Amino acid sequence: MANRATILKQQFQNSLALPLEQVLPEAVIEAVLQTQGVRYRQTLYSPIVVLWAWLSQVLDADKSLNNAVKRGIAWIAATSVEKPSADTGGYSKARTRFPLAVLPPLLKQTATALTVQIKPEQQWCGRRVKAYDGTSVLMSDTPANQQVYPQHSNQKAGCGFPIAKLVVWFCVTTGVVLEVAIAAFNTSEWQLSRQLYATLNPKDVVAGSALPEFISAIEKTRCKNLVTTGLATDFGLCLPTVSAAKAGYQVYGIVDVSGILNIRIEQAAWMRMMQAGVILTSWTAFTGEI
Image (cartoon, rainbow, N blue to C red; front, top):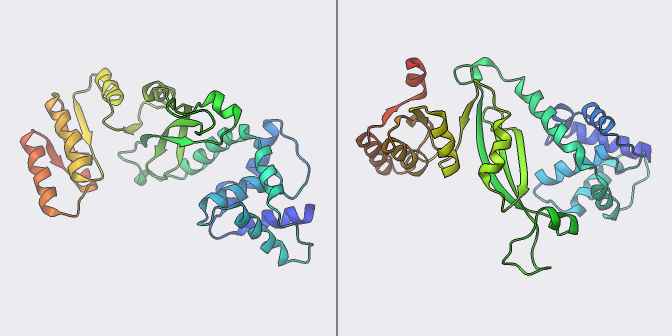
């Protein structure tokens, strides 16, 4: 059994599609398991193998349990070691037993490992740029999840799934999640975001949204100069930029990080912003001014 577990770990580490040894090495997982007081037997589906298999399952086009187990069997079949059962029950039960308490520290360690690799030229004016975003997710319909993350009130008991709300900081350079806060879906996003604010550093640059809560946070800073960007020129950049200008802010609209397929719509958005008093510029020109 130990030999088969070793084979699986080596195959996950060497996978071209998911270089786990570089991003989430065995030594780091083992250290977190020990810190959390997790003890386990040397079975085929150890916590390390389960975590790697789970991640590869999420990233695979075929996310089924059957495919995850077959992948492991195929790797082991290429050796002289006896193949394990094709039954998905063992892997499924091992996922249920996986200690979720190890995930938050692993998230932080992974984020830190990627962040320290950022070069100065990859930063904006020597500052880290963090993006704020939120979403909601459906969870397994268990009594424990229903108690902490209840389903929507318009759904009858037994006919819905628990819903959780998430808010995160993303690192714009690496795309890694830096911090996460989770609560029941009816929790205010503003309340959740306060948990993230404590992790900001004085030199961090935050890319947020036009939510009322975010606007309120900007107002509390008493800053009157704003820099705005957006993916789509008309909705992502123009609308919030014009709204900010009407609210009395001096707004710099960065046009070379947004775009749209229709050039006429883009030009109309530029003219609307200029009519509102927005200063249109590029990242290069803007950084040269400050």
